[in-house]
Amino acid sequence: MTAVLAHRGPDGAGTVAAGPEIAMGHARLAVLDLSPAGAQPMTSRDGRWTMVFNGEIFNYRELSRELGAVEWRSATDTEVLLEACASWGIERAMERLSGMFAFALWDTRERELTLGRDRIGEKPLLYFEDGSLLAFASELKALRNFHDGRLDLAAVDVYLALGYVPAPLAIFRGVRKLPAGHRLRWKDGISKLERWWFPERARPAISSTTAERKNTARSLIADAVSLRLRADVPLALALSGGVDSTVIAAEAARQDARADAFTVIAEGDETDLPYARLAARKYGLRHEVLHARAPAAARQVMDAAEHYDEPFADSSALSSLELAQSLAGRYKVILTGDGGDEAFGGYRHYTRIAVKQAVKAAAAGVGLVDGSGATGVYVESKVTFRESERVSLLRGPAGTLSGFLAKDQFLGAWPGGGALKHALWTDRHLHLANDLTHKMDIALGAYGIEGRSPFLDHRILEWTQLLPAGDLVRGGKKKILLREAYGDELPPEIATRPKHGFGAPIDAWLAGPLREQVRQLLPCPLLDRKLQIDARGQRLWTLLTFARWAQRWRAAW
Image (cartoon, rainbow, N blue to C red; front, side):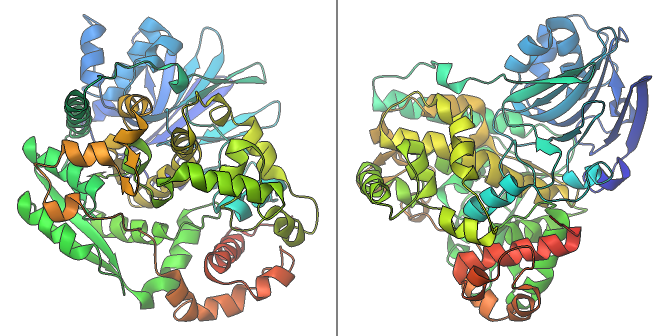
């Protein structure tokens, strides 16, 4: 299993039998303390706890000081996390973490295993359980010997709706994903899943003046960037030329970080390029432009099926893989602007959202779109294939999406606040936690690189969820407070530019370099052929992605 994940951790591997019933393995990506002292699995000083850990605890220095006079054996965040759990208990330790992480912790005294995952799902963790055995890994391919390769109907149904498979679902029967902000305890063959992050309970102070809120925004972002610049290896910046990535570049430059900038441009769409070059010049960054060219699209789709071991229809995954491949061997860490839209209200559909949702609710009421209730209407009105179409494609009952949305603990915990706040909450805990974070982790991990996103700092997310709606979206303007907070530091052309998407030009590619793949792979025999024949655009892309993935991983019903 560890060898299968060597691409994620090319700097070393280790295994340990922590007891007669437990074995743990780890593939290391060395970012902090590159010496052998940082090798994993790692055992606590008292011998009780053994841990494998993926990710970064960004506030590890602060936590190490709080732990007091500890004889540290390394300068790693892994050891800090391990000793924090040993000293404070798992629950208290996790609440004090600022970071992105997935870990497994074995308690030799209680004979209990704990799996833990970060608040917003930046680091993945999947597991297979059959009552007598629990196997876990960072990627599904490492669990290949445990499941039988048979498709999970609910997961396929939700994929056809959303274009990705959200936790706790997994594409193969018997496998589950640990949801973001959750932990799982396993003892004597019995598992217990529990949520540990409760953002609806957060009550950060919100100033009554716009000027002070701008200062708070800058302070939070500056600290989030500072924490994510901690590394013993060179860092890079993903620079799209949009507001979010430029804010990160501005903060990194202000903190004298030495980081090179990279921009991915899809052939036929160079909209972002002049803005990215403008930002690079302003902040004195060495800038490299990477081109995702149409003739390479066929290879990229095959690469995506190899690395994304679940079907994944977000076309920007191709650009993410292009970025990762270009950085491979040169950088181990890259900072991105992911999460800025969900934190500060940047998507186009947030404008006049109350009116839009009222219209969609009325349409749902007469059967023109699917969904019921605020969350159901918001999510199901935007699906790729409607429920009736999924019933046809799957040759039988579907309807899993509505049930999934109703059971999700985060979606059900929305604290209220109007249509805009509801949309932001839903996007953070569904799309962001299951699509965007997954996309970047898999793409970068495929080439031994770690992505860090300052906007995903939980303090930023908890603070912005309580901001006045007018600080986020007003009329046709979006991301208002963020733009104003950095108005003096961003080039005016960037501060005022509208959002530009990051996806591939799929219509042109499907009609051009991918046409032969469409002919060979569709209709996919795992799905009913009727709706596949005339599919276009995102619907065709979703089917092609599924068919290519199913062929690669030999999926079957």
